[in-house]
Length: 149
Image 1 (cartoon, rainbow, N blue to C red):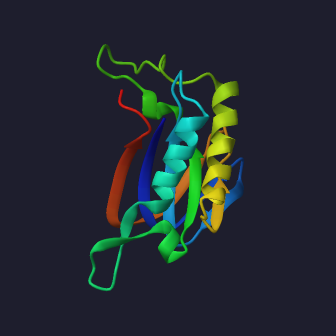
Image 2 (cartoon, helix red, strand yellow):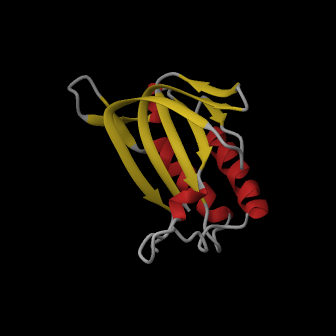
């Protein structure tokens, strides 16, 4: 399971002309699952995201977590994080989890963030074409993986 984290001042996601998720200070999480991922990956990754010290303290050092700042999370499913571009000119997505199972883990991940204490968890719309707008703070962008690939 992969999550691309972007620290943001604000973000929102639209689909079919409607805004489906809006946050202020926090993180946008582009999320993807691969074949073989399971519930243990969900919990580990949610806890890691919630506790990761990527927000500045009073001295400007990255010493505060999403939980400590009371920040929000906007979770956007993005199977393309498992795109393999090593051969040819078209990405292969064969490692990405099938949509039905991935949808279930996506929702579990969002709930796990809430259980971990994230005060606001907004969602994109799974398997929809989305327009994601964000103000990246820093910029700070990190990739987390639940297991070594």
